[in-house]
Structure formats: structure tokens, C-alpha cells
Image 1 (cartoon, rainbow, N blue to C red):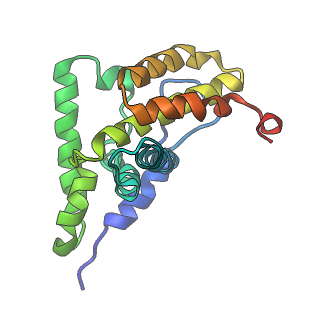
Image 2: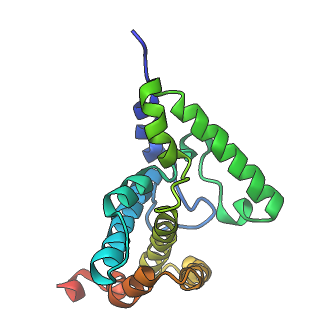
Length: 192
């Protein structure tokens, strides 16, 4: 009997902590982050389709977001200042992510690999901009939550992620930032 380890490896996403160089008031692991990115990608795609009347596939975006950091199971979460330090490191890390993705896909039955490949490799151009926006939005929300808890360690990261979000020029993201993002800075009593 063949032993397929893909799903067992995915379950280990919860052991990979994000924001390793920052002092956190609460930790966040890759599994939690991937769930939030999926929720946000689905929401952004719904806004795009239902509010703005543009083409989007919310279910496909959510699914792609669930797997967007799957390669980190084997690579770990490399801190952003290192990952994007220069073009050579960025390109090398992309290659490492690709090799890690290939290794993960090899842990599936051959009949499933072609179906998971666009998710693991993040190469579906119809969903990639929305997933990337959701990923950055999740990072920005983490910064807002840390600032709300009084952790000034995240001030620069909050400014950088906000600038990156605005630079994306996605109408669904702009709509979310105007209508949904402010609620993340409120207390539970203020939300009710």
C-alpha cells in the first residue's frame, strides 16, 4: 500500500511561527495565517464580483489562499527583510519555494498532482492578484491588532504594509480598506 504524506505535512503548518524577528503580543502560525488569507481572498473576490460587478471566482481564490504558503512547511517562514533584501535573494528564494512545492506535490498520488500544482505553485493568474492582496492585507491586519494591543514594535510594519496595499490599485482591496478595515482597530464592545 502506497503512503501519501501530503496532508500530514500540511497539518504541520501550525508549527511554523510567523513574524520571527518581531516581539509579538500574540503569536501567529502559518496555518492560522493561511486561514485568514483564505477568508480575505474569498471576501475580496466576492466584493469584486458582487459589489463592483467584475469577474472573480471567490471559491477558487479561497482555495488558492489556503495553499499559498504550503512550501513554508519545508522552508520555514523566512523574514520579509531577508526574503526581499535584494533581487538575487528574492529569485533564489523563489527557486527554493518551487523546489519545496515540487517535493510536496510528489507526496500526492499522481492523479491529484496536476490539480494541486496551480495551488502549491501559485501560478493561476486569474486568482494570484487577489491572493497576494489578501496575504498583504492579513499582514497589515496583524500589525493593526498588535498596535491595538499597545505593541509599538509593529508601527513601521503597519505603515509599510498599508503603503504596499495602496500601491496594488485593486478596486476590491480599496473598497475593503475603506469599508471593512477600520473595524479591525476597534474593541469587541465597539464592534457590537
